[in-house]
Length: 133
Image (cartoon, rainbow, N blue to C red; front, side):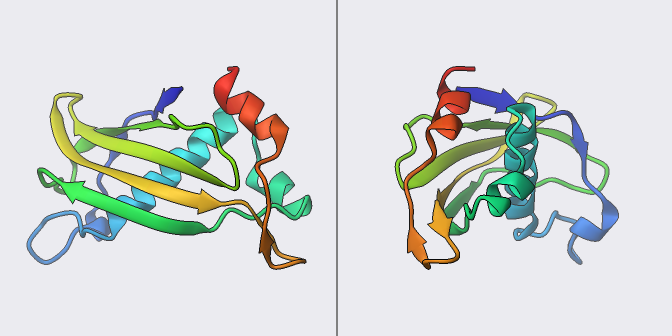
């Protein structure tokens, strides 16, 4: 299952001295799209945290293809191909004008119980929302 975010626009403060979007901001874009997708599926981070389900990022990678600059419009394509167990992996692609591939990447998040400080299995209601929507 996949999701495409609404159009986004590069803000001036996201750029570096060379005028490029700073490389660290792409992880923020990934997180922004992931949270937007969760909200679209009616999964609220606040509710998960109340149920002692935290989702720390345990792994991430990015391959940069082309730069973004101040004022550029872009969209993020995000998907989750594998059924989550104790981790959930997301794949991302950022496109400028839906044609130029800017980057691709992945993040892996662990289902974690802050009280026991141990990993936990993905709740069935989350699996159902990602794979039955």
